[in-house]
Length: 111
Length: 112
Image 1 (cartoon, rainbow over the protein chains, first blue to last red):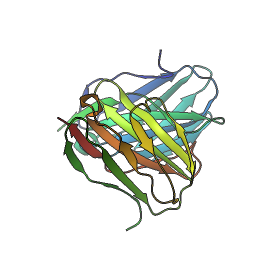
Image 2: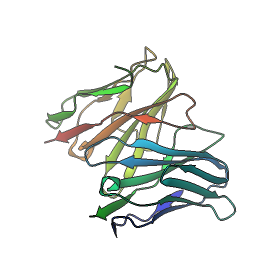
Image 3: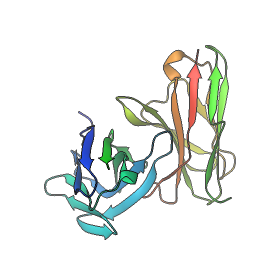
Image 4: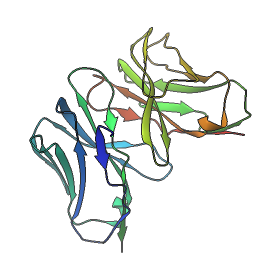
């Protein structure tokens, strides 16, 4: 079992919908949680970064971390066609280096 | 330009040939990483480096060699390319190694 699990989708929603993307993990040592967005044929770009538990909001994006359930979420409000991309969660611990990635969820927002 | 640059963007090579993928970053980040991305596997870590002259294996290091003589450069060499190494390769850098990593645009490598 991989340490980070993410439903690959694809997830298709109409423009303006609220999108919920999720990851679960098994390593209780993970403290740093990130969401990346990757457009087709591009490199991943950092979208949100959260340390430990709690919520973080940035414009239309909200990241939530529930360490007790080992579950993280990314919410996108008022989704736009330009949000169509693959979203990857990533996390890491205080020990060791490099990020542990989920396989990514493909999102399509239709006009 | 500030950022992280990979070259070449596309490469086709033959089985058995040696090929080097280049990565250059301008932030003076201590940590640099090489990932490969394949359908069904997501991003997998090949090698990483915590500083110049310090490198370590990741999840899938076999068949790859890295070096880091300067902080800003982290080349990845396939010593004898195999078809299974056909993939998209991403270089990334990070100030801390455990938090935000910034990725290059990728090198799409095809081994025929």
